[in-house]
Length: 301
Image (cartoon, rainbow, N blue to C red; front, side, top):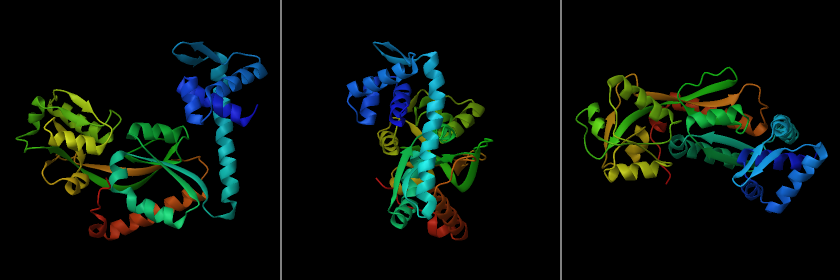
């Protein structure tokens, strides 16, 4: 079996669609189909069930997928190990983060890192906390910034800082119960900030009219300004973003949510990841000693 065939196979398995896989791999569709057919002929078994809606793995395909993912992981690890042998960070480094952390906290860190290590191909993905944890556990990301405590036996967690949460509204809120007559504007259900607010609302017996989901901070803030509803967000983001909105702090103990940088305990630590973690640790130490100097950063839009 060829490594490229296994990469094609795992991509098709993940996308459940040959044309989508071809687009991701920058192949023509016929090339992907041919590679899958060659792999099936080599193994003497059918790997996918074809239908008008796409493809699904057969039992043989499910079995091969477990081995293929491990083979590809070990191949990538071997490459990273060799590249790191000179102790100079080079090659890819794939990190994940929440939208809020990406907008406010990471730009200075990433600027310093990318300037210091120009040979590192830095890739940053934004997702909700639940998705980020899954991607780190499945080795799709080398590390990720997540909101809220992350207690998992396979993960290391490095505390970075606490974030204060506020309700963002176009006008002052008489009370928390005002949300019974309003829409809640939020990220998808895997967002830790949304989950924190929902726990508070459930405890208080408050149920917003509807929950409208968005993908970006700018979209949420824009819709709050348009009077569509109320949002929960990091105070530091909104304070620097728009002074026309009303910020209502959440009550204790829901007000503050910690941010952690997580990695797998058994994952290979490349030179690129090692230096990134080192820089992050140094920044955390500086922040603790000089909180007023780092407390407010500009939002990049």
